[in-house]
Image 1 (tube, rainbow, N blue to C red):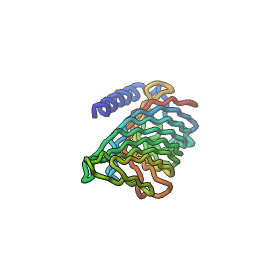
Image 2: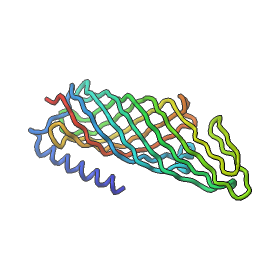
Image 3: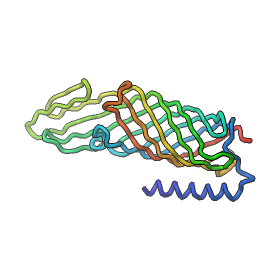
Image 4: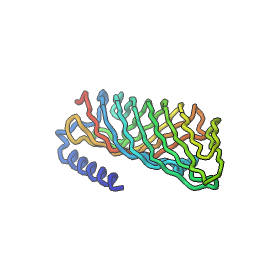
Length: 221
């Protein structure tokens, strides 16, 4: 929460700077290209009980966009999310998990304002991901437990599994971005991501991420 509040304060200062120097800062314009780095926190959603097995962790994204029109951008993004270890007690023992996901997605971005040096925006996209899970059970003394994920199953006193998930990833989000210098902008963004096993949404891992990013823009007017 503190990181998010700080990001919003910085972005608010950037907006004030943009408004105070309308003749100096460029506007979002067709033909521009941007390369950006986004850092943030990814939180698993309750879908499929993921939030009981893994917890929030760091997220990083590298993004390239080209504005085909003043208000529409197309591009690619490479993301890496690392979820921390979490767990809960069950009749057979304590179940815990960890997860990491890497994805490459094609994006479409829609700017909500034109001829401004700042704008709210919406984005969405789809791509491919490779994710890893670590699931383990710490059994009670003398208890045999079975652990399963998809078609994989392992039984024993302290069973563990490390299944791999690969397949379709879909993403959508909203944010606000503002120029702070000619050729550089700051952005704050909330992003939903779903990592499917194959193309099936059943059993997918989902997360809600909050990013603070810096972008460098080229081809300015």
